[in-house]
Image 1 (cartoon, helix red, strand yellow):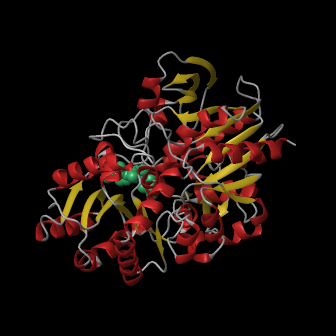
Image 2 (cartoon, rainbow, N blue to C red; image 1 turned 90 degrees about the vertical axis):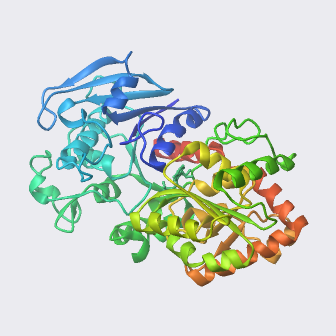
Image 3 (cartoon, rainbow, N blue to C red; image 1 turned 180 degrees about the horizontal axis):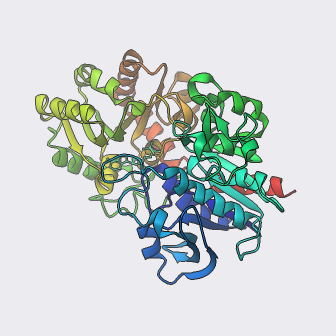
Length: 478
Ligand code: ADP
């Protein structure tokens, strides 16, 4: 059995701020079915320590960047976890990254260098455990692990670095180099140096044996200046080692046949059950019962997600007879804009500003279509849930959205394989065209039903993804 040490700053259900946690939390079970044993190394935040109450201390660092640290292993909410119990770094309430003032913790460089450092020690078998075959690190927070392995003594396991969102790169001043335990000669273009400082993600991409990201199209996009956000040169030089592996979703949690948040179950065989959710959605958002399309949005409200374009396109959406149910939170200006739209178009636009997982299920089940007009999207999970719930995704043709939705163009419709609508470029007018195309498709009841059935039958589980990761690990071991 291949043994993998996964290294990350979040894992659902222990600690989550975004999609990274979903991936890190879901992969171990899916990989176990492929013969891969995963242990997950996490910072010992209060939530992680609380879940690890039966954990066993097995190794101690006398000084891990300013204080002692104990490694604790055990089972926590279904995950095989190793936590770094280092109160001086992690015993803080709230978000893993920012303090109560909303700013990054000033010692984040040390907090996450510690994650990489411990991963490297476990990786080379120097922390009281047999060395794993592969160290799989996620995002910049774990990014120094392969650098510590490269500059440290002894054997090196194989390493895989996964990019979940290249916009977050972990840059710190070069003055930290010595304090982080890295040698002076590491501060070069062939080392950890990045724009005059220390780049955690840069280090990962420089030293990891393989680089993955969460969709094939995003893997291509990050080789270009616009998508690579400064790292495109390094990634292009390593293009042969870069691979895109799509994320999945938990098809038990997202199962319209058993979902307790829906008024009635439904499936690809019994799509009629959606009608009850549609009615409940109208009631919940104060929308007038109408024959027109109900568009749903479940999203962070940030410029990445392109929802300013949707706000601009509202006149078109309304002209087409559509309604909008939006669940989201984020940038105050966008929150205010959608609140205002709801006030001005009561009965046609309903918004819930906040994070509500259960409401997200109802919006997926009751909407006819789910809008995801992202400017960039490494993989995207909302459209995968939408496929499974038979809400046709209307998406920009970027990143994972391009890879997971089959556009209802004449050829795809004739072949009976379409699952949604794509548009390109990411602009207001292209989005408006997509809204019109969606309305036309909706008006053709048979074609719509065919797309809906295709969507609901699409494989959005973790199985294919886990197989691809397992093959990647195996190829490294050979
Ligand atoms: P990102 O990680 O960039 O926010 P993803 O699509 O990869 O985007 O994952 C976000 C997940 O969180 C999706 O499943 C989405 O439906 C869900 N989500 C986003 N905002 C909300 C919200 N306000 N309430 C409930 N679920 C939300």
